[in-house]
Length: 187
Image (tube, rainbow, N blue to C red; front, side, top):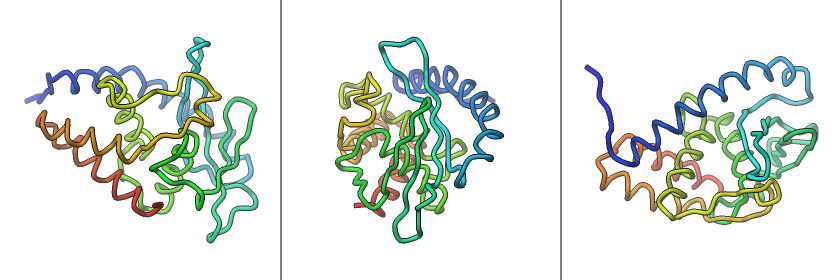
């Protein structure tokens, strides 16, 4: 017996997953060999897009060479550019998307992420997209916004948990509680 979620949020989530999961798996397979040769342990991969371009850009998060246990530094590679994110300086109540990507990948590596199949970043991504669809959150439309537009990710997740609970989407609401639990380690 197949169980389907025919609510607007459920349909939107299913459409998002079917559209993006194939790209994610394909990207991971093509990048894994390259990433394993790069410096630092590969923590995660994902996508970002620029509304001014028809292309989605792959992202790879790795530990930077100067990363330590007490001062974790995550190198995020997007296109041919590299960005260094100090995890100790990231606060989910006031962070850019690139910082949250690094934070999610780091949390997954440390075992404090959501534990989802595709990682905490993918869980946060479907929350972000649904929140934007519901009018609670502004998507980053350019690479510049992706790097610099700061948002309250905690408030967004809390608002979506309420929507999911009210819609009877308890699995999605539990994913949000996992995200908030992860955020607590960094606030």
